[in-house]
Image 1 (spheres, rainbow, N blue to C red):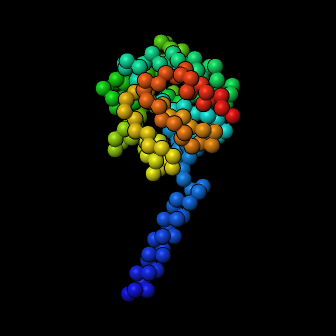
Image 2: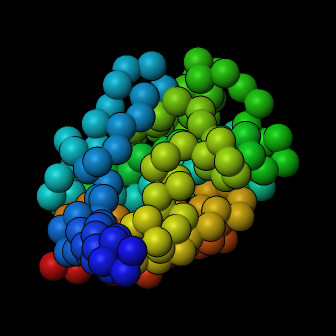
Image 3: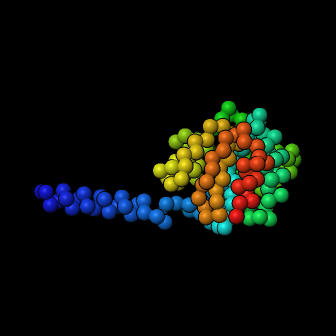
Amino acid sequence: MKKILFLTLIASAALLFLQFKPGTMKTLYDFQAKTIDGKPFSFSSLKGKKVMIVNTASECGYTPQYAELEELYKKYQGKNFVIIGFPANNFGGQEPGSNAEIKDFCKKNYGVSFQMMEKISVDGKDAHPLYQWLGQKSANGVLDGKVKWNFHKFLIDANGKPVKSLPSGTKPLSKEIVDWINEK
């Protein structure tokens, strides 16, 4: 009996080691989602690029950030920088529209040309797997980044690892974000 218990403990320790050994932690590149047009999108297509992921809403006090997000994207897209917007209705019911309505709103009001994704949940038990990963250090190995409101931003490095979680009030053209984009 002692031998079985000992072997069980050894096996459990080995599994734990394999689960958390360097190189086995997920990166952004392990995820997929659908674009706002319903097409599959693999984040592995972004290898080597810095990425900002932001949850958006059309009826929020922070909605005007779309203009700065678009300006930031246009200015830095040539520096291997990408913005991915995820509409979500988790906070205050401020994104009630359909994907088609959201796409039209973004284009018409802010000229959004960065990649918008289909509307998802970014919080709670039904959160998209990408947001579950972003929000838990135990999953991403770097930071806890609970989304508390619309226009929360995650900065992902060129290796697909999260480096910063920024609250809604952080403006897209802030020095902190621009300096991060320009870092080598």
